[in-house]
Image 1 (spheres, rainbow, N blue to C red):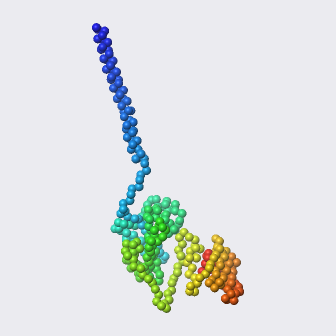
Image 2: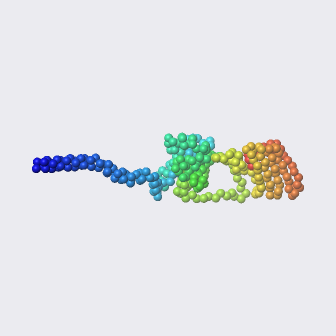
Image 3: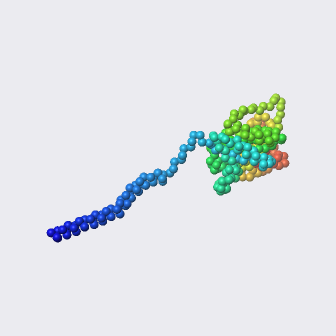
Length: 310
């Protein structure tokens, strides 16, 4: 009997000890068994955290950025150019449809200098695309101020960078620079399409003559030779139809040009030989004459490619 009681006591003691060990082991293993569940939850959230963020849709009424370039001018005081730039930028104040970004605000950014060095173009006008991308502005407003005679002339051009074209342009003349600055904001409203612009037609009266000053074409991303060719005015000879061709290497002084007029009068310009040949048509009796370039004819016709009337 005593042995049976002792064995029962030992059995219960052993069972209790086994249960304590089992509970302790279960307690130790529980975090490990629950860990996968926690990881599973994390794994469900991980793709959302690691997935690329979608661009937030722009609100329908978000303002469009317009890069406002500094007003440029020839023989115009820097203070006048700066004041005019500030007035033009001020025309964007208070608007909710557009947001004007000035060049000075870009220059204030620390990354502006490095971005400017990275641009392959040097001229601001040739850098319109790069500048607009840097400013995140799809449109550009360029302004020029100059004086013709006694008149101050302000020209505004609204560029669409995506299509590389001018959406609108406006040029007005003023008697004084203060008058021009008073009307600068109104001009911005017209060129940007905020205010209706009334088109005006210019027509000379019968028998009237006019004198025009034609300035050299300002280059931006093209060679000076091309600019000189586009700038040529020619001469007043009425409506003249010509068939023209030229072979021009890097040096315009080595070029060859051929001009055939409507009556088949032909001019061969050999800048490489320094001679110009004139072949008269049958209606003029035929024959061939020549003249020395730089003596009988101005040598500047060989200063630029394809410019026989320079």
